[in-house]
Length: 208
Image (cartoon, rainbow, N blue to C red; front, side, top):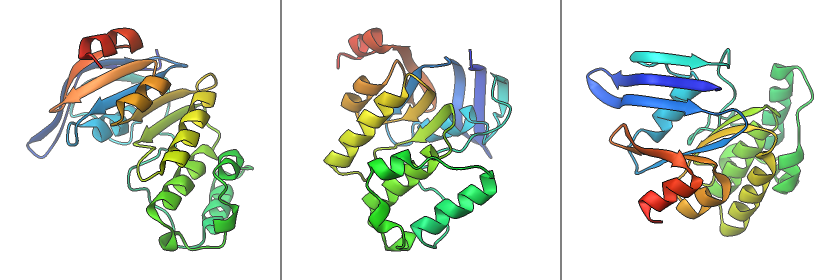
């Protein structure tokens, strides 16, 4: 197992965000976390990536530290797209992978300021930047948000291509996309896991 959670609780002040979370994230699989807005999806994703620590419970992970993660509102320097990649290369001190940048056809945006881009363009830059780390474990929070249908289809195809090489944990709202990408599914409601199961059993129980 890559990550094991047992009776995990997380709260901010006195507000309970996650409770009674028992969960195993398997190496080499794509796990999709689903649920309505405010159900705790993003919080669980950050907890799995060790960005935040549980209030109580047992947490065990083969990852020694957090890995770069796609947030819903990523922090980017308000310089050019190109600058954000160059500074990343300096920080990481190794050549970054431009495969996704090229696939999303972002070269014409290289000299534009991040804050001048459309929301869809920003999202493609955010995704490409995370994928440029070329890491074996991916944590993606709503990767398809703000994308048009053509870009969303490309994203799905690229993620499917990555599945055989990486361990992926992501949050999604769209059940049709989840069906195409996921191996294992978790449904959250009010901070609790309502259901977790493999592809066939999960969608059979939810009747989707």
